[in-house]
Image (cartoon, rainbow, N blue to C red):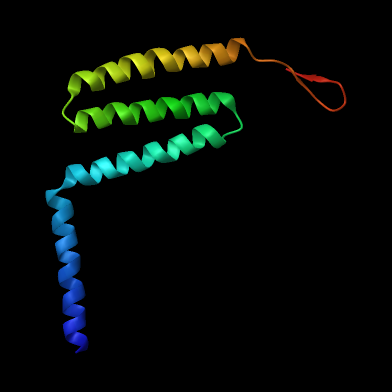
Length: 111
C-alpha cells in the first residue's frame, strides 16, 4: 500500500520533469512572465522614482523577450530599441532634470 503510493508519487515527479525538459520554452516564458509581473509591482510600490524607471525598463525588456517567444522577432527588436532604449532614457533624464528639493520639517532643503 505505502509502496504503491510512493511509486505513484515518483512516477508523477518523473512525468513533471519530463514535461519540463520537453517544454523548456514554456517554463522560460513562465519565469519571464513572473519576473515581469514582479518588476511591474516594484514600479508601482517603490519610493524612489529613479528605481521605478529602471524597473519599468526591466518590464520593457521582459515584454521584448516575450515577443521573441511568440516568434515576432521584429516586434521584439523594436520593443527593445524604442521602449528600453528611448523611452526609459527619456524617463531617466526627465526625472533627473526635474527633481525638486524636498523640504524637511525643519525648513532645510535636501539636495
